[in-house]
Amino acid sequence: MALTVSNQFPTGTKAPDFTLLNTVDGTHVSLSELKGAKGTVIFFICNHCPFVIHINDELVKIASDYQEKEIGFIAISSNEIENYPQDGPKYMKAVAEKEHYPFSYLFDETQEVAKDYDAACTPDFYVFDADLKSVYHGQLDASRPGNGIPVSGIDLRNAIEKTIANKPVLENQKPSMGCGIKWR
Image 1 (spheres, rainbow, N blue to C red):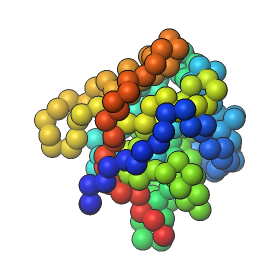
Image 2: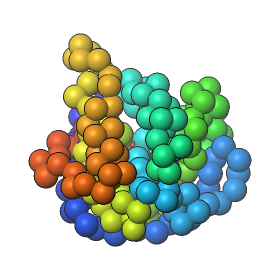
Image 3: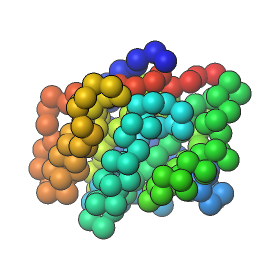
Image 4: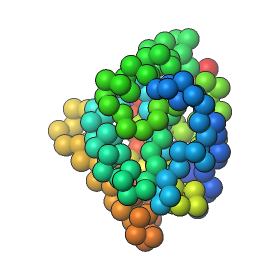
């Protein structure tokens, strides 16, 4: 497991559009179908990364707290599955059901969506406003497996709160870090 830090994604960038397989129900869904009226959180995760496993409970809590406030949540896995079959769609569905994900868990088979977002690691978080303009690209919080800091989601929660209130999100955004996306 090589520690990878997220790439820059400039504030104000329009969210690249996509249509992907929702592994939970087998349908293909688009960004326009899943976006929230007040904002959208898109995050790249996978099934096996210890950094994602470490925060799964908090991801569920945050989505549950903010979906009723018209924030959309979209999880995407872009890992190649020939060498990482545990990240394939049938296993994604099983993880989504086991963890009770209240959001769609989409499979980026071609890895084009990850490339469009310049995603680098799992987890990798993006927050967009109601017009799908980027307002935040950074960490969930400072907790990492084994560092003793409790998972709180504070950085992502602050970004979402400011987005709902139409206030500027912090200028100095700390990048996310985790396992590198498994490219072909």
